[in-house]
Image (tube, rainbow, N blue to C red; front, side, top):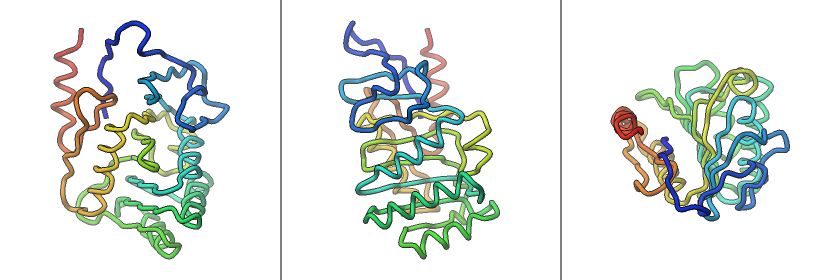
Length: 219
């Protein structure tokens, strides 16, 4: 995921406190006020870093009404990840479609998938390649994408960087990637959002060229 430099006419793009984000998602009260949220009309892009990720992820799952699509490299049982798992079970019990894909190389992932499947979720292991994406998409309204793994160390202690966004074309591209990975585990997904949208969402194998283009266009 990349967020291009934005040059909007004065007054059309404003940085606001993250707690003021629109679209019905009230971010946790401990979300730091200096984490600027960039507004694009009724949509937004917000940095979510370090310990902020955990409560935001939980809230996304708890507020889901239709669908949660989650990709993760690992699921390591622990205090924080147990609460994520519980939130996913509660979503299933509300009638939410919960879809999860995790990599098979980390201890505990297979048991996690088995528990979710038994509880009514659609959960699978990536046994073909490496499922290294960390992504949560909720109700085609919000997407959280970044570096945070499903482990207590990552959710509670590590330095992590993610973006939470609600721009429709970008969320749809993230959802297309998420469901595409789950439907075709062994196939690379090339989902990409339109260039006029922030943040840009790039699929498998596109990151290097996206980074190169961004560096060349830097001013």
